[in-house]
Image (tube, rainbow over all chains, first blue to last red; front, side):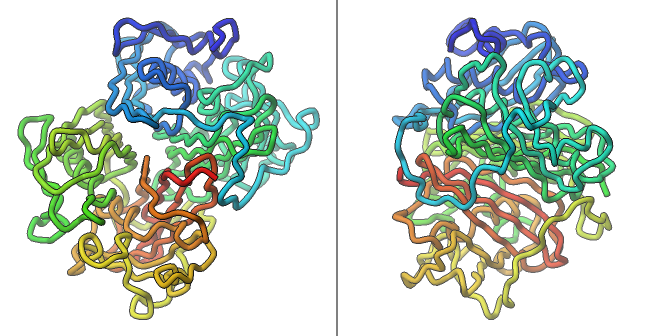
Length: 269
Length: 269
């Protein structure tokens, strides 16, 4: 992690002792005042990787406890298991005197971009996307400023119509993702990417304004190769007051690098 | 919870103080000596529901730290947030002096079976299953005894051929689930159901023997109505040393009651 890069700098952690890390919820990673959920996961994951000495996220689940506001923060890490291949830890991000996010993560080492491993099973491939130049710049904070300035998103033109009140009528959001200044992406950046596009349900004509995340899980399959990530998010079921959003992230070599699922609040039908 | 019922009795917890609960990894819930993963989640969830005073699981994620062996166990619960609608807690199940499972759960109240709430979005429905009488009795512990005697599973005949070395060539497993003696099912039983059918990947012709679960997440949408649950599990990607298994569980009224996803180990390709 080269801390001169913007995402690395905005997610840097400093050990206070073996189990506590000082960090900062950086200014400018918010959507309407609240820090992006993927960014908050990244803060907690940096502390887990530091505490365990492992390079990569394998699977991470966050539950959101309170909105994250810019300012000093602390991550408390509890290493639960240290195995040969994986380590598992829980972590809690606190800011402003209250818990903001709880994390449970298993970390280790995932295949590098150059590792030639043919998939055992592959049902599906990257989303069909026009080139980034022919896509539309809109991030999860699709209003300008804040989070929208921190990452580079290019939405499929067919999925971006919701911004002008012309939703696609499909609960699907496809687009390209990369860090700005083309900062190299590690597996922590994949967790950020899982929560960076506008909610897929914005494509459907539902009476939803915002969709607060209750839980987000990210599974990492490989370190991403350099370049744009091709992402697809979709929601199939909005029932009983909640909805899921499933994501797939493919790297520039066409390899699946992450899957995500989140549970978010939806109005009860 | 009526503790005279077998599943309720096998998952009973007794408070030691506000944060610790005594329980038992019951005999007979094992697959080849190790307790079923969904059963272990159920133990931890009972403690979380007791500690928070909430009736239902909303979302729960477990990371598996060590095999669960029959014997006395303890669940330590840390309530992280108590809100009006939801409470969030982490929990750790320990047995034989070592941590077996780490859990992160948000609990609250989900719609009851009789609650009439039309879905806002519904892309898909229950799996197409012959009647339970025309299906095949096989549980996740598809060898006889142990876990296979604790739950009632009826697999779709098209998906059960793997037992005789004739896999369907699809990484899909569909079947019915209920507790034995038709014990009423609550949302904790849904977490059990998420891990009760044979692994979907057994339907595909892959060089996989067993598929140890790293992480399992269950999202609950509603309390199940009485009767059989219709379940579908599928794996799309076995890459980079892991595979996901996605599940949907529908109740006897045709309502989606839970979704699940787990990350399990697969041989590297």
